[in-house]
Length: 395
Image 1 (cartoon, one colour):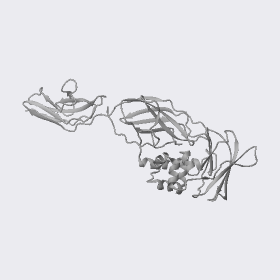
Image 2: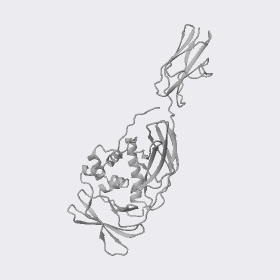
Image 3: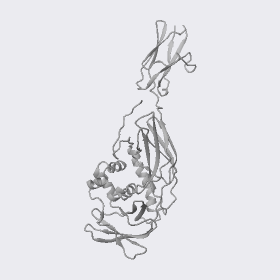
């Protein structure tokens, strides 16, 4: 069994192989800027104004605002229904974002590491300032995690409103002494929910320890389609629970319907079960794709043998080579020909043993030149590339 070192970081209190790439994280942010911000602020698909947005889920109505609120200042939220003329205050205390780095990190818990990696933040202060100074960054992350939306003071969850209700929300901004600043946002909505669809056409394949997963998901068409990213869940044959195997966000993309991602496994020659699930802005999961059971085969060939030598000794041909250091090496296939480019045949039936590093050819003929090449094979039937051919000149 081939084994590979597993460099993992425990973000979610489970041990899973993680995939990190600074360039890919940067590309993730750029994709969010180009794909999600137009939806949040411009697209009629959201059917709402840029400064307030709601998302309805089974956990309540998530009400977001996108105003830049100075440190220490906050807001209150009020609601009135179609049957009432007066606003009712919904929050007990003023809603404020974290005012210093440690407070933000404490509010995020383990998720801080995940988002800091995504933002390529060097430390807690760098991460805090990137959200304070850049409205886009804060907005993007708010739609990836309600926890970060609350920690940055951009979200209130209304548990008193249900789908179908016609409501008007009013956000009133206050200063650091909780006095109204005079700035408000007021919007009316008919609350609607959206259920994510099932990802389809799931295909799984591996190249060595790299597992590649492909699936399809439709483009955004509904006004309240809020699916933002996907989770890839994997369970080994001898385990009870599925685990999320990809740390980098696999983002929803409005310009495509086919998705691909990959990650590293720890073992080969094992059965796994894989499914994909869509996740919306409230972290609510849609129906999972039809699971795929897949055998992760060992398709990694042994290393190519670089050194092969042939000399005459006591009237016989002596061929030697360097041993291949492969834990599941089965043996060597040595072939001979009188032409360098064609006509190679095995020197014996079966393989030479995995510990053998020489072969004595007793069937050579005087005056004939022979070419030898060798390849290593493992227990899974993978064969290395052939070595370069070596010449034996027989006097």
